[in-house]
Image (cartoon, rainbow, N blue to C red; front, side, top):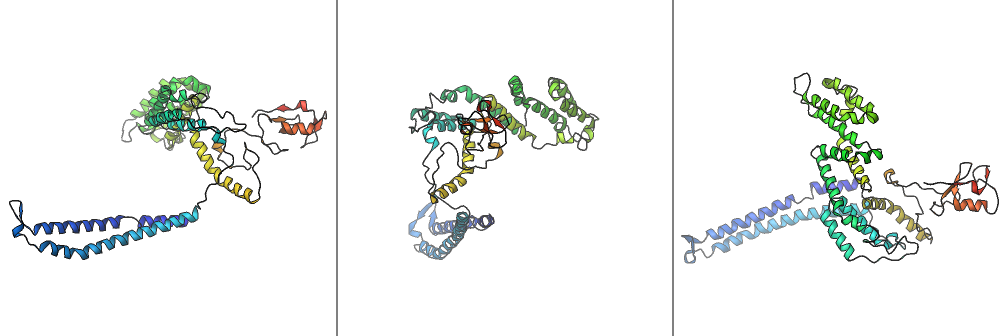
Length: 428
């Protein structure tokens, strides 16, 4: 990346248009002055030009004197632009060396070509989640009025699915869903930009039962942050009184709100209460870390978004964004695999699973999978993992092959013997 950064620095310092703009402005000033000279060479009386008393050679002399300076100005502008073009050319070459442009080859199997309605739904949901309500409405109208034709593929879940019937487009078109997202963005704006926790607290209190069933601590974290804000940010450093106003406000707020959380968050409430005794020297107190969390506002915003979407039955992140990001991560590996397979005249025989492992970030691991150690195949609903009495696990088809027609068979990983009926299906 070093050569690329060097070329970028060169564009910033030498390849900008500031010099060219200055030279162009000088040329314009030169022409403007010449025009004023030509006009002044004519005799004016009472605002009217008298051509009989005008100097017939004045304009010609002025234009003759103007040729050389204008030509020099244009040469200077062209010279400035040449340097800009050279810098852009060097940067383009550095980009080409670092990121080699390879045409994407056509895949023989496209899993999404049979489900255009799924793609449309993902796009519409992404637009709604981003707050682009008018764009989402226009897109949904167009998608339902002119639905794309899906390619029927063998083994597809439902190649004839439509956005209206099978994918719940009514829920996307409903005004209630848009109002929910509009409310979410309003609360996030107040939380992140205005440092106003009250709308988020009111929402959490309204949905406290659902949040508690999910094991969420959002409501307490919001109330805790409100206490911290009253305690620290409302207190003025110049206050000379023994008990700052911020401390009194925090104490009154704690007495009003914390009693509802004593059963589950007693230890944290005790820590917050103990911090009041150190209000004059809070930074050096054992509780200083509670009040020095610079990323607390962003953490609260992310937690609120996650819980808000969960109560709507949605993931915290846009599925379209996740799919596009995961695809971008996997693409180099898959392109390299395809090149190797072409060279060796091999074929990709598994349509519903990848032939190589793609190292995605931990946050992109949503479902547990099991790969049979005997057949090296990933388990499916038809071929689930089976655990034998010894504790070892193989796929159901591998278990059948091991048992064959025998009553008992030996585990491929230990000396234990068991009967096929003794194996138990595992649910991931």
